Length: 144
Image (cartoon, rainbow, N blue to C red):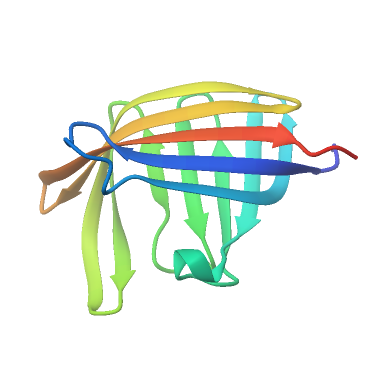
């Protein structure tokens, strides 16, 4: 098994049809990356800027499926799988809510050195789409 690489991770979250970028966010952080046999994984530790200081966030990437795991995974994984809906329990300061992820497309251009990943999806509450979103993720190796 290969060793993980130190990388710079850029994650942009964009609303797809909003008229402003008020709901957009961008996170740039250092992390770790591993790509082997068509399977990629990258992870980083959340900071106080995200409100989840110290929590480990991991993305497991296959061709047409991405799993986003936060912390111990007890509150549910966000699973992005083309043309499939996945539901998960999302914890908020006010309690838990059942959310759905309806993934429209995954564009996976990951390789040994990093690459790009785009995920276009809807967030649903009670099977009603409440937002259409796009993750744009870039992974690049850090100089050794």
